[in-house]
Amino acid sequence: MRCTVLRLTALLAIATGCGSVDDPARCATSADCVAGEYCASAEGERRCWPDGHDPVVSDVTVRCLGAAAGEACPRDGTLRVTATATDVEELAEVRAALTLAPGASVVMVRSGATWTADLPLAAAPVPAFEATVDAIVTGRDGARRSASVTTTAAIPVTRLRWTREVEPGVPVALTPAAVMPDGTVVVAGSNGKVYFTSPDGTQAHAPVTVGAGQAISAAPAIGTKAIWVGSEDGWLRGLALDGSGALLGVAVNSEGPIRGSVAVLTEPTREWGFVASTSGRLAGASSAGGTDITGAAGAYAVGPVMDRNEWVYAATSSRTSVIRSYSFDSAFTDRWGVTPPVVGVSVEVPLVIAKNDEVLSVGQDGLVSSTTSSGQTSLLATLTDIATDSPVILSNGDIVVGDQSGVLHRLSSSGVAVWAQPKRLSGPVLSPLVLADTSATLIVPTRSGTVYALDGSGAQIWSHTLGTGAELRSGNLHTKPGQPPGQVTSTAYYPTSDGKLHAVIVDGRLDTSAPWPKAFHDPRNTSNAGTTP
Image (cartoon, rainbow, N blue to C red; front, side, top):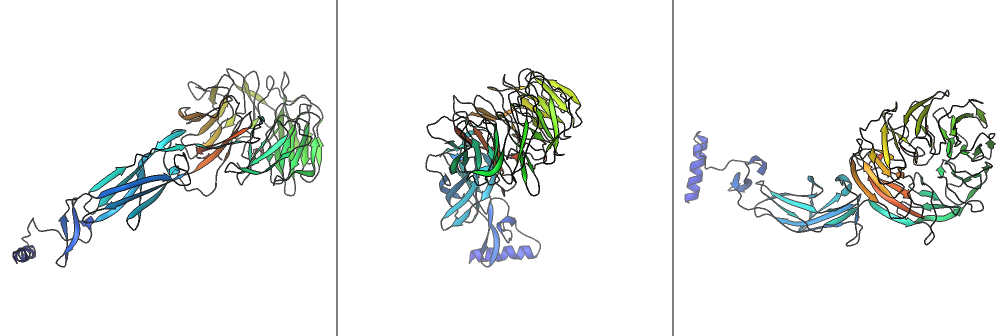
């Protein structure tokens, strides 16, 4: 009775403008109350009441979906977090976060007595090749009191998706990879076979032996009508896109070993593959059965490239290297005749096309040259050592190229050094991958086996050595479509000289605003500046 009298007295005081500081405030929800109080009904009214109890969080577990116990979780995997949470008065919400990103929590969903949340690792920063992660579960009550529990499972996280030996027990020297739109990885070997690997690392289907099985050292290219493969036996052949074998009549003999990749020209009703041979000839084969071949003009060690005008360029590997240019309409037409521009000594790394359709070449004398579509050549820079692989061109026109001493250079489009000090890596530098939607904008392999993730200033974010005792090849990339913003990852593929194919998870996607973001231009290796990466 005394409590009722006191409450009536308090209500009367409020009604007459003489409210008591001890009288609980009215509320609709706990959000209307000050911190430390929650909203509850009493005697027909909703009032704010003090809360003297913290939530209780217990039985917190974290595991990687699809991974066995103790197995590393892929960098783009998903962690499932479960917990039990209670509160004496009012449990408002339960949230989960990863220790890699403690400020990015998500609301857990209740099922019976258990709370659950699935947390994608792709949404968290992982500035390392390998790391560990745990989960943080926080319960918050209506009074805004909270309690947290952090797991101690130390779930291992790795960027290595898988490693596959294409010919178990046989150390086959592999070419750089080409990647089909569905993610199938295509590599060729020194045993004359072409291998097909699914995105999950399993064999997509049986390998195809090309010709008589002579060595293949040039990266294959994938068109819309054929897989193009040039061989040491001098033949450019078109294979069926399903990997079932060679296409009948789709081939041309270049009259000398082919050691550079294929440039691909896709037309409405047919497709052409172009190669450059040590015979000094360019040769073309059509998916419709046509062929053409140029006259001899000095040996070629690398393949041709195409600009957006569909003009074909190739650089000789002779002591005094020249660039030759051809237009093509079912047959090659020499655009520069007997006076092609000289671009230094022995060009033996692939050419690239800049945004303005200038052709960039790097000779074994370290000269970086730019040649216009009209044949005017200018010297941009001189490297400190011999270049070992294709340069790449960034979206702003900057050139990134490495040399055999392990130095990576970033030059402006006019050849001026962008980095005060070039980046020194562990071995001869191969062609980088240029990525967007990530801080690690350059993924740079070295021939000695280490892969580096660098930002635009050259600062290292992570590095890792893929095996030992075998040389890496330049990388390629596949990005699964449909990923949500802020969670985009891709798989980079690195073949080796001993028959292994490594799949590495990287952040971001290929930078399509860059005119030449990787070796051979795009994931299909078309070496064509007009192809969409």
